[in-house]
Length: 273
Image 1 (cartoon, rainbow, N blue to C red):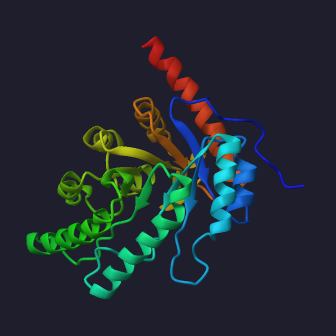
Image 2 (image 1 turned 60 degrees about the vertical axis):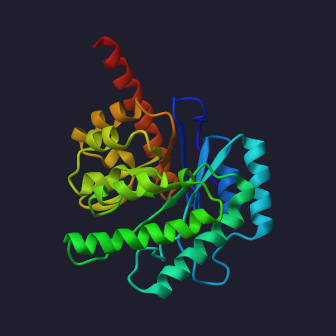
């Protein structure tokens, strides 16, 4: 018998709590069937796009839509990471735009709350001319996507391994949303609260997981103690979706237990203070 979560976390937090579609070593539908009774949102991971059956079939999408209604949950979509709208190669740019449009068309029946996008920075410097050329490519390709009628706010651009400020003028011009990945900030030594304060009006989703010895996507109980209070205080100001971006049931259970324990402790502490 396949193990499941021991309790429901629906309504436990003021933000929507969820996780990825790859907790069980199975496809999208079996994962949602197992997770839907216990969580409020599922991050559909569509990381790979270049093989023939990369996207969920229309039948799978129909099943996922029915499950969302049955379990009262929402989906957010992580767009493929094997494409780049910022590439110097025009063919790669075109392939990225075409791929994103195919994904959007396929997942539209699920009414995803956001489409999380990686905008890579593969340049070898941060000289003004290099940055400007990179920004122009991103604006041009995002403009093609938005010209099809997709609202800018539907895309949440994730912070990666370069200064997010490079994206700020693009996001303002195109009215894009942001995805706050706490692990990326921690590993690059950036301040969580400063990032949140700067971009809070644009943040629609937070990716949360444990970080240890420069490894991503572990259970939350791997977090160093110094990060616990800042993350809980940040979450106390957030009303969107939080995705526990882990990839096994053991890591999910540990993360949910960690979340509940420290959330209630920090909530009590804030009331006393």
